[in-house]
Image 1 (spheres, rainbow, N blue to C red):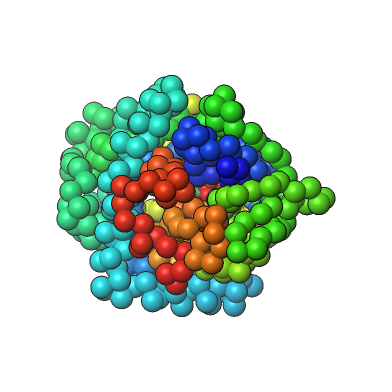
Image 2: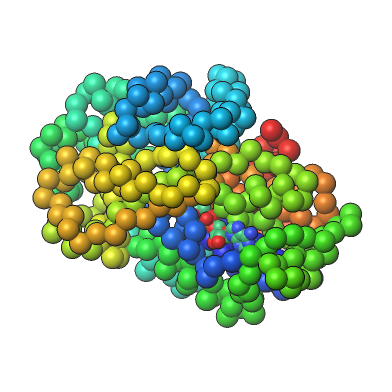
Length: 410
Ligand SMILES: Cc1cc2nc3c(=O)[nH]c(=O)nc-3n(C[C@H](O)[C@H](O)[C@H](O)COP(=O)(O)OP(=O)(O)OC[C@H]3O[C@@H](n4cnc5c(N)ncnc54)[C@H](O)[C@@H]3O)c2cc1C
């Protein structure tokens, strides 16, 4: 049976690998070479403690302040605001208390499996050296900042995610470069990070090819189908026959879903990183500072600083001032960080208004599947997504009930 997976980011590549391993004949199609989308430059974290819905009340409280602050962690380009209204209305709908409880459980169910599934995938593909052994530190200047993030910690406690509150001395012992202004931290031992998320996609694509899979470069512009899928149509008119199609085109998935008559409320939450090649410091843990809204991860190619959300659509040019703001904030935590030798990057997080991904068969067309909308957690969820989608597509029983992640839930 011919299966075409569209999108060679971490999600599509992991699914293609899983299906090929299970005996499907898979073609992985991307308009670019594998791994050049959001999966290229994310913050490399298996961020199992970050599944909280973005529509929760502690976030709402901060939105007015962020909107007024040009250096705030969330920025909406004024010209893009009208386009955002339908998505934002669904975001509001996702903030009802009963809905929030359900969404927390759905995110936690994926995150509870994420590290084990990632480690299993790395073992199976001989890529264990891609992951670091250390976890992540969440930083707080003082008790007041810690209290402001209390709901996050309470949700982790409710779902049993391991974490440990540590004081100034222990912080210094773990990460001597951190500023004395950090009064306490929470250590998340499971939030380990990949050495380079791009290399990971390339290595996984290689393993997929070694199993007999095929990678094709082409821009998907259409489909032919009856009640079932028939062909994937590429720009220039070339077609690839397909009994099954899996849409994994990240933030661009809505364009393809629209062509297939299944519109999805997918937006891009644009994010930025700065890769610092000669940072002048060494670190073992990744760090996040919730009040300052940035993350720093030690990677194979130096130190990566990132974060920030910019709502401006898929086509607007990057605004690298966003990257400079996060570096400025990061230097408050890491005063000796040198930033001369650095490269800035922008990528598109595929964001659904209720924060949980779509992992689903089509509600309309036989042989059509979707795995998209992983938002801030695509790397974290990739191995779990591949397993669940592999089960769903081959007719095995998925380890999780996939009903909450269905495409027609909106
Ligand atoms: C700054 C930043 C930091 C992040 N940090 C983290 C983190 O620490 N941990 C974490 O888990 N997640 C993180 N994320 C999120 C994560 O990167 C994404 O959720 C994930 O990369 C999405 O993977 P994907 O495969 O769905 O999409 P992508 O990697 O974007 O891949 C989609 C692919 O589809 C292709 N495509 C699109 N349209 C077509 C078409 N018509 N025809 C052919 N090909 C097409 C594109 O070329 C692309 O290669 C971060 C994201 C950003 C931007």
